[in-house]
Image (tube, rainbow, N blue to C red):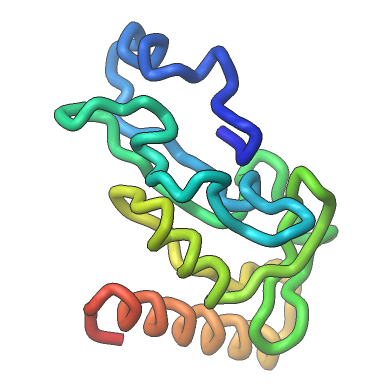
Length: 148
């Protein structure tokens, strides 16, 4: 699913025909364009997808597309941003823009931002990644009334 619309092969009618579908992963990075991150008309993802109120399919949201993500190509950028591949090219995203999108999209659950690193990274870089990821998780929990 992208900002431009739902691909024809992923309609809710088709998902109903596939036995055992329990969730749908929607990549927030697909909703970036030159004006930023967001849904075109402000409706929640479930409504954009045509999901019925009693649908058993959970909508799961993450920023990065796991199929396209490559740590070697898209490292973390600066102290508060991560690199993401979007329909408009590679760009940076921050906690604030992602949390605004999550609140607008209203998925059933979402991933926090994470500073993903390679096994070969040094001890200082690993410590920095853990610290940043923990801070982003704490910030996300605070955004939604949890304890950070």
